[in-house]
Image (cartoon, rainbow, N blue to C red):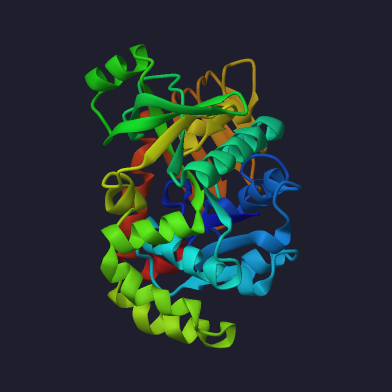
Length: 357
């Protein structure tokens, strides 16, 4: 019996001004008609019933998520009082699930990835869940690199351990932080490295044991959730969460645990991490400009335009990103798309602009 946990606490700063604190990337229909979190839930069904889907989010985002996902039990929308990275997020969900079904399987997914086809995604998850149940291992999903990315972490595959559902599961040799361009090119040429997708599968007993072993302070703080009633849960979290360690699941557990396996995804994957990455999902004009919303260009090429209302006009420019949304407009070079986050931080630091982020 698989329970799915969707991590939906991100603020989506790289997609400003469309993304704001109360409506981040995962709550927007950046690609397709559904929001990204709705797409994540849709690809889980019918493999995982909505009654076994959980969402970990922020207090600010919870009301919008309830409206978007009315089929998910309200008690399964877990609200973090403060962000503490992925290890506390996952531990919170693990103990909450254990209270209902202590021997369940658990799949952890970010809310804002683009994945297709659904059939291959489900085949991968089913095979990983069977392997996790049989071996008691912690399993991560790797993505075969398609370019020398310096923005993703990498996983080096070691000895083959098993094969299930047409997928090979191998021991993780090591996790590698975001490399420089030279190292990324070397990884691309090797068949031993995959991108770290941030998707995980394990059993509830296995992940709780790993939390107790590697992050005992986290286990001590959150294990009372096994007995805390649903009505008292939020008050409990409000009290203990600020004192939790701020640590990722990769650093806190996966890199230290002795029994971690990786399998290469049987599906197409994109984390769509910035405006620049949207190119492939937008309409292309005769001048190689990519747009959603109205765009008219003159002597302009290779630009990305995203407008939720006004017409965007371009004259004599190239390689720009232009986003018009509500009360704000963004203009930046395509190769500076990752720096939008820096702009958002600057806006947050000025009181008169805080309502815009």
